[in-house]
Image (cartoon, rainbow, N blue to C red):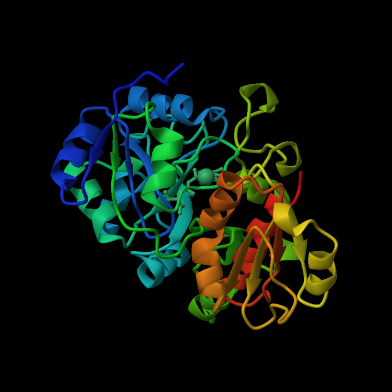
Length: 354
Ligand code: TXA
Ligand code: MG
């Protein structure tokens, strides 16, 4: 449908041109510190509608609106609760998104008709230069086709979006590699609920709100549905719920899935799981510390990450590499659940759920 657009490649010093294209209603893919984003002018309903077409994203899944500074919050939010402001001041610019009451200036298509809007101020200098040059808030989901892993480098952004957008900006591989942390404020303004885990970790959030509010435990969250929506990469409009926007139960959606089947293993189980698969068909992703030593070679792809941060940064690239080299299976070690390990486990477990 939208696969016939003439796409140009922009270098990372062409932010002014990218901003101009965005302001005039174009779609531009650009790097951020988390993943590559597929941007459009958030004030332009027609441009934002084109995002959904380019991704194959059902219209019930709202977009994140990107800004460059706190002073621009009023472009998109009608109110900023004190606890939200505290978190924004602490974690912006950075891989952090907060849900706020939506300003009427934003067209309904951006928020899928919700009364709330997701806002993020990225730290990537390239992303910031592009957004600043546009002069408007930029709606930008991850630049993947719906249901696929987010692109974390230029090549995979091109692979997924060439012919569907006006421009793809060439930038470095993303520093974080996983999508931003998403939170919302609830409980009469005193509670913080994590809807999507990310590089702003639960430990960081808990420390920031201490004395001012409470970080809800994952199992005492108000509703799992909002969290499901924050992960949704629904594959077809037909699967959208008839009852309303952004409350789609996560179960009916695919998430972050490569073509190869993902099998996760706790470190203790890893050697056994590795033994039971055809090495020639398998990509093995593991932490160097727990990777089995001798006799473990022979996998089509074998990656040993020195740190959990490196594992997170490389995860989606590893998925893509496994698919490109024809692996049928990806065996992925589950990292410990502290810090960004929690977000990484979350993405791995979602990818492993067919
Ligand atoms: O790191 C990121 O956040 C990247 C980069 C490009 O900034 N963006 C990103 O956007 O991951 P996207 O659209 O792929 O994921 C945003 C998630 C969606 O699953 C959506 O359901 C959720 O945020 N979301 C957006 N607005 C929401 C709202 N008002 N309430 C609840 N969830 C919302
Ligand atoms: Mg996404």
